[in-house]
Length: 488
Image 1 (cartoon, rainbow, N blue to C red):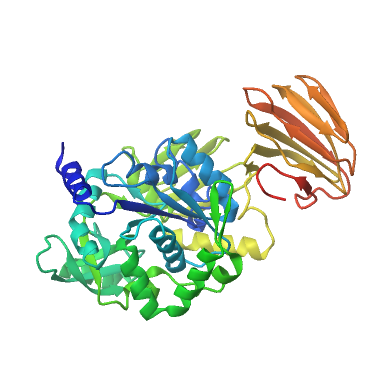
Image 2: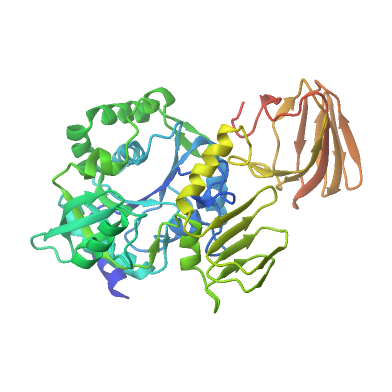
């Protein structure tokens, strides 16, 4: 038994509550556009391994003595994606809390603390963003154990990353005096917003400054106690949101009106920068917040020229660049310090040092009412996915995949008709009062205004081609009459 497992085992045997991993999955990841989109953000993508960032985060504390099943907080739009990714990874969360609106990390953590306290009055929370990379998991566990006694004593513990260089993309924590009787934990001297280059270089030269990881080890009761003192309006709004919340399938849905009234503040701005209980555990655990394409290049497997390539890439005289393609060939000649990312519907070409400008570019696209900031050509649903393969005036063609046992809602359209051609598997189709099996190479027509439903009764994925025709083909022309997934 290694030291970490032994310490966690002793912690559990002392009768203490388990550590509850709380995973925050509400980010949109605009700095990694065009791969990350609002409907499918970076935490749901496999950027550094075969598993997604969310799956890697949840697996970090699985099967370890002393850790409970994770509690995940995500926005409503991503609920089925989060649930499915955890299922695929063999991870069963204790709950998935749904945020009806994005209100930042302060309210999200407060809601999680309240939910946990009703089930564990001594709950300790290990709060982690879902989109960070920690390559040295054993050192992460050791850091958690170093902070454990402080958290049990009511300190709000954060983890400061030993800086590798003078980076202006992170906030900093200045460590103060050591906590009495607790090795490896220091009081927080101050939090510093993202500095300019000269200030970051001074921090590195002086020492005692650490990158702010956004990871916390907190007593749920202590956090809410400080919140009641420092931001009572946030506490009251979150209390009402949890009390009026409702279970919905595998999810707990926070009440929309009270939660939407909570001040939109990070935990740092709401509590950590103002409390006298803040403590920091310095740690070097090969951490990255994957906050830019350059950051992905830095943690990737660089070739002899300092490049990281993903997908079908052919390069000549390319140096210090990150090139990624999701399908089409990308050929690059004679470039240096550049990012090229190609998806089915968009291509980003940027200087590697212009990562902060990508979010501004996404904002510009939104101002122009472009769909690319929010949607991929493939849309994901609880029953499977669809991919737009062609579109023109009064028609649209999609490739639809339905999981075994998946069932679309009983629905109708006022403005379009649909023609389905099954190419793989067998479809069970309800059309008006009819129910029929449609097999490979067979088709069925759904007239405008006809109630219909598509289901996969088989054990293999169902694939079909859908041809839509009519004067309006938007996704909002769906009138759901009944739905297995509670979306009516």
